[in-house]
Amino acid sequence: MPVREGQATAAAIAASRPVTPSFFSRTATMQSTLSLADDLVSTDVLPPADADATRHVLDGLANSPYMPLRVFVHCACRNGVVTLSGNLPSFFLKQLAQRIAMNVGGVERVINEICVDVLPVG
Image 1: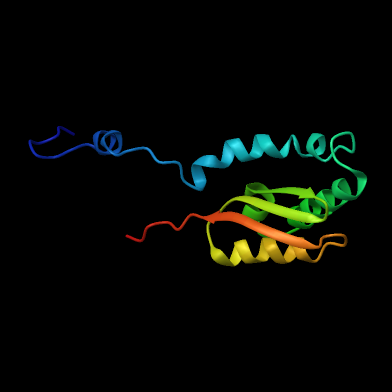
Image 2: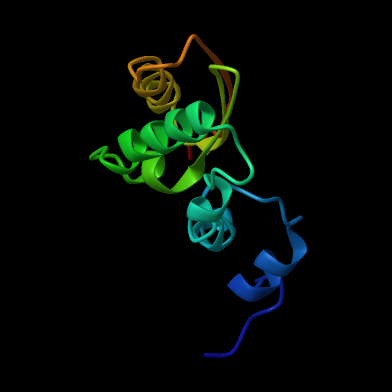
């Protein structure tokens, strides 16, 4: 179908928009990070108590029925303080990730640095 004057194709419109990373475009990066989780939880790098806490938090997130918690949340533990990071699509999931981390034995405090990517409406 020929394009009339004044009409733009979808490809031209998409090419003219600035590219900003969103929650959904980070999927490949986050999935490759998951494959490194066992290496990061190694007791060679972390003290055993911190490695156990990190492993239990990651297990709790992995057992969640919410896919974004399983894929997009990172966890680090040092001296009983768990730091959560990553990007999620809602504040509910951010709070749920924090609850999961707080319910792990050996965790004294949770620092929640998860960003919420609110998708535009319309």
